Amino acid sequence: MALWGISLLTQYWNNLRLGAMDEANRVFQRLAKLNTFQDEQTFVQWLNAQVFFADGKISDALPYYFNLLNTRFREKALFQIGRGYFFEKKFREAMTNLDILFLEFSDSRYLEEALFMKAECLVFLEDWDQALEAFQLILRQKKRHVWQLLAWVQVGNISLLQKSSERAENAFRKAMDFFPEHPLSYYAAFQLGNLEFRKGNLVEADRYFSAALKGNLSDLMGETYYRLGEVFYEQERFDKALASFEFALRNLAETSPWFFLTQLEVGNVQRRWNKREEARKTYRTVLDRSRDEDIRLAAKEFLMLMESPPSAP
Image 1 (spheres, rainbow, N blue to C red):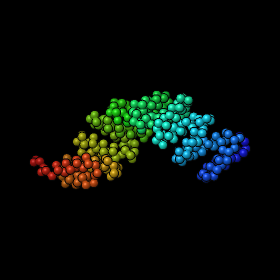
Image 2 (image 1 turned 90 degrees about the vertical axis):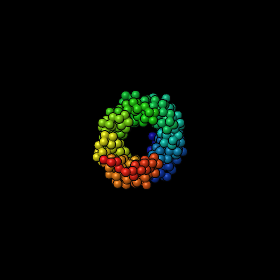
Image 3 (image 1 turned 60 degrees about the horizontal axis):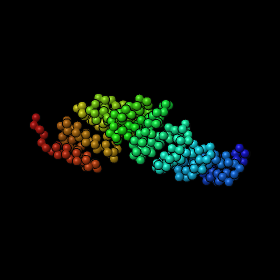
Image 4 (image 1 turned 135 degrees about the horizontal axis):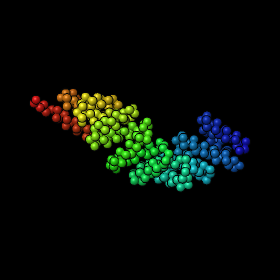
């Protein structure tokens, strides 16, 4: 590389590190006008594209990537164009460029991530069967990697949408078995708990919900404690049910759809214990503050039940 080209590249890089983007762009424009430094121009175009992309300016980055398609950066450019269109929610354009990547670079270093992106494009387009096929391509890879975990979880989620409980169970169990310490493993445990609860397998549901809580994931804590409370309620272990519901309330925002549903269940426990005044107060709170019409209707019905005279002993 010529000294003049090295000098310009050094200036460009130093300006990037200092965050002087305007000056970096001026250096880039100077490099672009020097036809004798093609390698330097290509490299700086790549750097410029990456800087724009990292800064979230995807529409500014894409033209640079397109300019690189006939250079040694073709594989990287195809991948980044696919990513760019994906983040811009232009899913069909993303898949077009990813398919070209698969065709021309079958052993690409970006293969697993690119396959996952294509599958996610199909998910957003609600083409569930094609999405499942794309996820299966990831799962057939011999090397175990995090994209396989993400694929197992998404196979499970799609299977739930398609009401294929058996396939969902298998997918979530694979996620737990292969990646037991990953946060998504605890999400898989939570979903397995839901599936077991629906089948009436309360002991297994308890086991999976308890496993999910071990992950200490803030996004799951409230709903998991609520689900665990439902298990205890069905087992008529009302003291444990109430404790779980109270833990759930501490971990749920009032804007969460689960908050007032949990309060409703607290009222149900109080009613089962014949604490009628406490139950009335809880139901009234739900009726006054919840915006969910189904939950408000349930609270109203329970309140009407509470207004009736207690049964004679």
